[in-house]
Length: 92
Figure 1 (cartoon, rainbow, N blue to C red):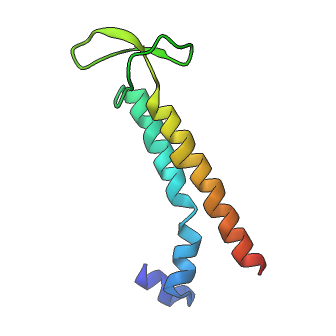
Figure 2: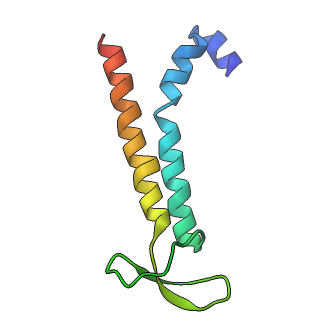
C-alpha cells in the first residue's frame, strides 16, 4: 500500500477511504461461503425461516440460517452505511 500511495501520489487516508466500502462486501461473501460450506448454523427452530441442516453429529434439523442473516447485516447494511458516509464526505 505504501508503494501504491507513493506511485499514485495518494495519502494513506485517501487510500483507506477508497478501500473501506469493500471490507463489508468481503464479510458478506465470507458468510455466504460459510452457508455453502455448512458452517455456523443457528439454533433449531419451528419457524418458516429455518432450513434443514445437520449439526456436528450429523443429525438433521430445521435451523436458522444465521450465516445469511450475518451476510445481510454485516455485509450489505454495513456496505450501504459506509458507502453513504463516503459519498457524503466526497460531496462536501
